[in-house]
Image (cartoon, rainbow, N blue to C red):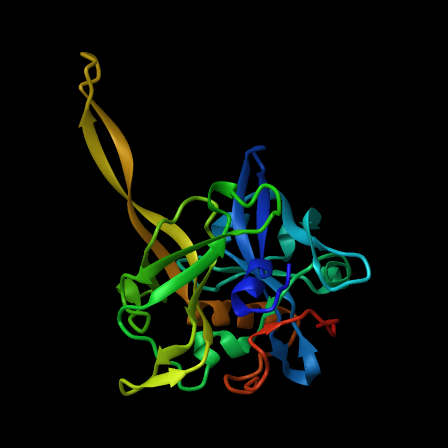
Length: 293
Protein backbone atom coordinates (compact mmCIF):
# COMPACT_ATOMS: atom_id res chain seq x y z
CA UNK A 1 0.00 0.00 0.00
CA UNK A 2 1.42 3.37 -1.04
CA UNK A 3 0.93 5.91 1.75
CA UNK A 4 1.18 8.85 -0.60
CA UNK A 5 -1.86 11.04 0.16
CA UNK A 6 -3.21 12.85 3.21
CA UNK A 7 -6.16 10.48 3.35
CA UNK A 8 -3.92 7.41 3.36
CA UNK A 9 -1.67 8.87 6.03
CA UNK A 10 -4.66 9.39 8.30
CA UNK A 11 -5.06 5.60 8.44
CA UNK A 12 -1.83 5.41 10.42
CA UNK A 13 -2.17 8.25 12.94
CA UNK A 14 -4.56 6.36 15.24
CA UNK A 15 -4.38 3.34 17.51
CA UNK A 16 -7.07 1.21 19.08
CA UNK A 17 -6.86 1.46 22.86
CA UNK A 18 -7.88 -1.61 24.86
CA UNK A 19 -8.63 -1.00 28.53
CA UNK A 20 -8.99 -3.49 31.34
CA UNK A 21 -10.78 -1.79 34.21
CA UNK A 22 -10.07 -2.40 37.88
CA UNK A 23 -13.23 -4.55 37.93
CA UNK A 24 -11.90 -6.72 35.09
CA UNK A 25 -14.14 -5.37 32.32
CA UNK A 26 -12.58 -4.86 28.88
CA UNK A 27 -13.48 -1.85 26.72
CA UNK A 28 -12.18 -0.20 23.54
CA UNK A 29 -11.46 3.36 22.48
CA UNK A 30 -9.38 5.40 20.05
CA UNK A 31 -6.25 7.49 20.40
CA UNK A 32 -4.33 9.58 17.87
CA UNK A 33 -0.65 10.43 17.67
CA UNK A 34 0.63 13.96 18.05
CA UNK A 35 4.26 15.10 18.09
CA UNK A 36 4.38 18.82 18.90
CA UNK A 37 7.56 20.79 19.35
CA UNK A 38 8.38 22.38 22.69
CA UNK A 39 10.85 25.01 23.81
CA UNK A 40 14.51 24.07 23.95
CA UNK A 41 14.33 22.00 20.73
CA UNK A 42 12.40 19.30 22.56
CA UNK A 43 9.46 17.30 21.26
CA UNK A 44 6.57 15.59 23.00
CA UNK A 45 5.27 12.43 21.30
CA UNK A 46 1.88 11.57 22.75
CA UNK A 47 -1.31 9.63 22.24
CA UNK A 48 -4.38 11.87 22.64
CA UNK A 49 -7.67 10.31 23.76
CA UNK A 50 -10.55 10.87 26.20
CA UNK A 51 -10.38 10.74 29.97
CA UNK A 52 -13.17 8.18 30.10
CA UNK A 53 -11.33 5.86 27.69
CA UNK A 54 -8.51 5.46 30.21
CA UNK A 55 -10.41 6.00 33.47
CA UNK A 56 -10.14 3.34 36.21
CA UNK A 57 -7.69 1.38 34.08
CA UNK A 58 -5.77 -1.52 35.54
CA UNK A 59 -4.11 -1.98 32.15
CA UNK A 60 -3.95 -0.10 28.85
CA UNK A 61 -2.77 -1.44 25.49
CA UNK A 62 -2.53 0.43 22.18
CA UNK A 63 -2.60 -1.58 18.95
CA UNK A 64 -0.43 -0.18 16.13
CA UNK A 65 0.11 -1.59 12.65
CA UNK A 66 3.50 -3.18 12.30
CA UNK A 67 6.22 -1.78 10.03
CA UNK A 68 7.92 -3.99 7.46
CA UNK A 69 11.49 -4.92 8.33
CA UNK A 70 14.05 -2.57 6.77
CA UNK A 71 11.35 -0.55 4.95
CA UNK A 72 9.14 2.39 5.84
CA UNK A 73 5.99 0.57 4.73
CA UNK A 74 3.04 -0.84 6.67
CA UNK A 75 2.97 -4.59 7.20
CA UNK A 76 -0.82 -4.75 6.97
CA UNK A 77 -2.50 -7.43 9.02
CA UNK A 78 0.27 -7.50 11.60
CA UNK A 79 0.25 -5.44 14.77
CA UNK A 80 2.38 -4.31 17.66
CA UNK A 81 0.88 -4.10 21.14
CA UNK A 82 2.24 -1.33 23.34
CA UNK A 83 1.32 -1.22 27.01
CA UNK A 84 1.04 1.98 29.04
CA UNK A 85 1.20 2.86 32.70
CA UNK A 86 -2.14 4.45 33.66
CA UNK A 87 -0.43 6.69 36.24
CA UNK A 88 1.44 8.61 33.51
CA UNK A 89 -1.71 10.01 31.89
CA UNK A 90 -2.45 13.74 32.07
CA UNK A 91 -5.99 15.06 31.70
CA UNK A 92 -7.34 18.50 30.86
CA UNK A 93 -7.34 20.57 34.06
CA UNK A 94 -11.08 21.17 33.75
CA UNK A 95 -12.92 18.03 34.94
CA UNK A 96 -15.71 18.72 32.45
CA UNK A 97 -13.35 18.59 29.45
CA UNK A 98 -12.99 14.95 28.41
CA UNK A 99 -9.52 15.03 26.84
CA UNK A 100 -6.41 13.19 28.04
CA UNK A 101 -2.81 12.70 26.90
CA UNK A 102 -0.73 9.53 27.20
CA UNK A 103 2.98 10.51 27.11
CA UNK A 104 5.06 8.29 24.83
CA UNK A 105 8.59 9.59 25.50
CA UNK A 106 10.26 6.41 26.88
CA UNK A 107 8.30 4.18 24.46
CA UNK A 108 8.76 6.32 21.36
CA UNK A 109 12.01 4.72 20.08
CA UNK A 110 10.35 1.29 20.17
CA UNK A 111 7.22 2.58 18.42
CA UNK A 112 9.30 4.25 15.70
CA UNK A 113 11.34 1.10 15.17
CA UNK A 114 8.51 -1.43 15.09
CA UNK A 115 5.32 0.42 14.08
CA UNK A 116 4.24 2.17 10.90
CA UNK A 117 2.85 5.44 12.23
CA UNK A 118 2.26 9.01 11.15
CA UNK A 119 2.07 11.79 13.71
CA UNK A 120 0.08 15.03 13.73
CA UNK A 121 1.96 18.20 14.57
CA UNK A 122 0.69 21.59 15.67
CA UNK A 123 0.65 23.01 12.14
CA UNK A 124 -2.65 21.24 11.50
CA UNK A 125 -4.34 22.00 14.82
CA UNK A 126 -7.02 24.59 14.04
CA UNK A 127 -5.82 26.86 16.86
CA UNK A 128 -2.35 27.01 15.28
CA UNK A 129 -3.20 27.33 11.57
CA UNK A 130 -2.67 30.74 10.04
CA UNK A 131 -5.91 32.36 8.82
CA UNK A 132 -7.95 29.26 9.68
CA UNK A 133 -11.60 29.64 8.72
CA UNK A 134 -14.56 27.31 9.13
CA UNK A 135 -18.13 28.02 8.07
CA UNK A 136 -21.10 27.24 10.29
CA UNK A 137 -21.67 23.99 8.37
CA UNK A 138 -18.62 21.97 7.37
CA UNK A 139 -18.08 18.39 6.27
CA UNK A 140 -15.97 16.52 8.81
CA UNK A 141 -13.96 13.29 8.73
CA UNK A 142 -13.25 11.22 11.83
CA UNK A 143 -11.10 8.13 12.16
CA UNK A 144 -11.35 5.44 14.80
CA UNK A 145 -12.65 2.10 16.01
CA UNK A 146 -16.45 2.18 16.54
CA UNK A 147 -17.39 -0.64 18.92
CA UNK A 148 -13.78 -1.74 18.58
CA UNK A 149 -14.21 -2.50 14.86
CA UNK A 150 -11.42 -2.22 12.28
CA UNK A 151 -10.60 -3.97 9.03
CA UNK A 152 -10.19 -7.52 10.36
CA UNK A 153 -7.63 -8.43 7.68
CA UNK A 154 -5.48 -5.29 7.42
CA UNK A 155 -6.13 -3.76 10.89
CA UNK A 156 -6.73 -0.29 9.43
CA UNK A 157 -9.26 1.95 11.26
CA UNK A 158 -12.76 2.93 10.18
CA UNK A 159 -13.18 6.32 8.50
CA UNK A 160 -16.54 8.09 8.79
CA UNK A 161 -17.97 11.39 7.66
CA UNK A 162 -20.60 13.83 8.83
CA UNK A 163 -21.14 17.55 9.22
CA UNK A 164 -20.75 20.04 12.03
CA UNK A 165 -24.10 20.31 13.82
CA UNK A 166 -23.05 23.40 15.77
CA UNK A 167 -20.44 25.95 14.62
CA UNK A 168 -16.83 25.24 15.47
CA UNK A 169 -16.27 28.79 16.70
CA UNK A 170 -19.10 28.68 19.26
CA UNK A 171 -18.43 26.89 22.55
CA UNK A 172 -21.49 24.69 22.96
CA UNK A 173 -23.07 25.35 26.36
CA UNK A 174 -19.97 27.31 27.35
CA UNK A 175 -17.67 24.27 27.04
CA UNK A 176 -14.89 24.02 24.41
CA UNK A 177 -17.06 21.60 22.42
CA UNK A 178 -19.29 21.25 19.38
CA UNK A 179 -21.82 18.76 18.01
CA UNK A 180 -21.29 16.56 14.98
CA UNK A 181 -24.06 15.12 12.83
CA UNK A 182 -22.69 11.63 12.27
CA UNK A 183 -22.85 8.07 13.55
CA UNK A 184 -20.81 7.95 16.75
CA UNK A 185 -20.63 4.71 18.71
CA UNK A 186 -18.70 3.38 21.69
CA UNK A 187 -15.11 2.85 20.62
CA UNK A 188 -15.23 6.02 18.53
CA UNK A 189 -14.34 7.93 21.69
CA UNK A 190 -10.97 9.57 21.16
CA UNK A 191 -11.31 9.73 17.36
CA UNK A 192 -9.67 12.79 15.76
CA UNK A 193 -12.05 15.05 13.85
CA UNK A 194 -10.70 16.68 10.68
CA UNK A 195 -11.68 19.13 8.01
CA UNK A 196 -10.28 17.35 4.96
CA UNK A 197 -10.58 19.49 1.83
CA UNK A 198 -9.55 18.17 -1.56
CA UNK A 199 -8.86 20.78 -4.23
CA UNK A 200 -10.35 23.89 -2.63
CA UNK A 201 -11.71 25.28 0.62
CA UNK A 202 -13.41 28.38 1.96
CA UNK A 203 -11.39 31.27 3.35
CA UNK A 204 -12.07 34.32 5.50
CA UNK A 205 -14.36 36.80 3.74
CA UNK A 206 -16.22 34.26 1.64
CA UNK A 207 -13.41 33.49 -0.79
CA UNK A 208 -11.92 30.20 -1.92
CA UNK A 209 -8.38 28.87 -1.88
CA UNK A 210 -7.18 26.19 -4.25
CA UNK A 211 -5.28 23.21 -2.89
CA UNK A 212 -5.72 20.63 -0.16
CA UNK A 213 -6.31 21.37 3.51
CA UNK A 214 -6.18 19.14 6.54
CA UNK A 215 -7.19 20.66 9.86
CA UNK A 216 -7.57 18.89 13.19
CA UNK A 217 -10.62 20.54 14.73
CA UNK A 218 -11.58 18.26 17.58
CA UNK A 219 -11.84 14.89 19.29
CA UNK A 220 -14.96 12.72 19.58
CA UNK A 221 -16.05 12.24 23.19
CA UNK A 222 -19.56 10.74 23.29
CA UNK A 223 -22.82 10.13 21.50
CA UNK A 224 -26.11 11.77 22.43
CA UNK A 225 -29.00 9.54 23.43
CA UNK A 226 -32.75 9.97 23.76
CA UNK A 227 -34.49 8.03 26.48
CA UNK A 228 -37.85 6.62 25.40
CA UNK A 229 -40.51 4.32 26.82
CA UNK A 230 -41.91 1.80 24.34
CA UNK A 231 -44.97 -0.39 25.00
CA UNK A 232 -44.50 -4.16 25.18
CA UNK A 233 -47.09 -6.91 25.42
CA UNK A 234 -46.19 -8.05 28.91
CA UNK A 235 -48.75 -7.42 31.62
CA UNK A 236 -46.20 -6.95 34.37
CA UNK A 237 -44.08 -4.56 32.30
CA UNK A 238 -46.30 -2.43 30.06
CA UNK A 239 -43.39 -0.23 29.01
CA UNK A 240 -39.68 -0.73 28.63
CA UNK A 241 -37.15 2.09 28.76
CA UNK A 242 -34.62 2.15 25.93
CA UNK A 243 -31.94 4.54 24.74
CA UNK A 244 -32.19 5.72 21.14
CA UNK A 245 -29.17 7.21 19.42
CA UNK A 246 -29.80 10.63 17.94
CA UNK A 247 -26.99 10.35 15.36
CA UNK A 248 -25.30 13.25 17.13
CA UNK A 249 -21.89 13.19 18.72
CA UNK A 250 -20.13 15.54 21.13
CA UNK A 251 -16.58 16.58 20.23
CA UNK A 252 -14.18 18.75 22.19
CA UNK A 253 -12.49 21.35 20.04
CA UNK A 254 -8.91 22.10 19.02
CA UNK A 255 -8.45 24.54 21.90
CA UNK A 256 -9.24 21.77 24.40
CA UNK A 257 -6.65 19.53 22.71
CA UNK A 258 -3.99 22.25 22.86
CA UNK A 259 -4.76 23.05 26.50
CA UNK A 260 -4.41 19.37 27.42
CA UNK A 261 -1.07 19.13 25.60
CA UNK A 262 0.08 22.28 27.41
CA UNK A 263 -0.82 20.72 30.76
CA UNK A 264 0.99 17.49 29.83
CA UNK A 265 4.25 19.08 28.70
CA UNK A 266 4.24 21.33 31.78
CA UNK A 267 4.60 18.21 33.94
CA UNK A 268 8.06 17.83 32.40
CA UNK A 269 8.87 21.50 32.85
CA UNK A 270 8.41 22.40 29.18
CA UNK A 271 6.16 24.67 27.12
CA UNK A 272 4.54 24.10 23.74
CA UNK A 273 5.77 26.32 20.94
CA UNK A 274 3.33 29.22 20.47
CA UNK A 275 0.82 29.20 17.60
CA UNK A 276 2.43 29.91 14.24
CA UNK A 277 5.94 28.83 15.23
CA UNK A 278 5.68 25.54 13.36
CA UNK A 279 4.34 27.07 10.12
CA UNK A 280 5.89 25.50 7.07
CA UNK A 281 6.22 22.02 8.54
CA UNK A 282 4.14 19.23 6.97
CA UNK A 283 0.93 18.62 8.95
CA UNK A 284 1.41 14.85 9.12
CA UNK A 285 4.98 13.84 9.93
CA UNK A 286 6.97 10.71 9.58
CA UNK A 287 8.09 9.82 13.11
CA UNK A 288 11.42 10.94 14.41
CA UNK A 289 13.49 10.32 17.48
CA UNK A 290 12.36 12.59 20.34
CA UNK A 291 14.42 14.56 22.80
CA UNK A 292 13.18 13.48 26.21
CA UNK A 293 11.47 16.12 28.33
